[in-house]
Figure (cartoon, rainbow, N blue to C red):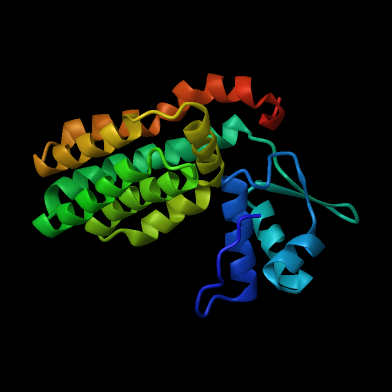
Length: 225
């Protein structure tokens, strides 16, 4: 597992939830693999109770399956759930870029440009998850511009299935189109061009469809039949 330090004031349960979720998205915990409460608890330096609570929470989003008396398993990739998360993001973020066209300031664009520079730096970095984090941060900044962070948290809570596919896409296809999309979205918002911004962000979020065949071919064992 990939482990980071526990955050200040983070409960044991929230720490376990964050670490398990991150490792599922990173594919460190592979789709279809069994998960040991005891082993995860030892790696995180926790008791088994917060780990069990975290797994139960993740089972609510169908990313983990719990089998009484047998253990827990990371769910296979279900493209129906991926599509639902995609639908939610497209609807929400088309509305977000429309609002950003009205509300964005010069200071907002400074933050977006800094993020884009880091994306360009990390695109060839061996650890592709860093690029995924910066991608998520770019979208988060759009919600911040619009003062819609509760909407962002709602979308993020549904995105684990989508993010897992995005993570595989970065290692399977790996192209610069995501960065190009982000730059084009930023420029459209600067120009207050709502229609163009919405067109680009819908195309951007839809790229997982293009990558689906490559992912299924390379990782058939990860895909729900």
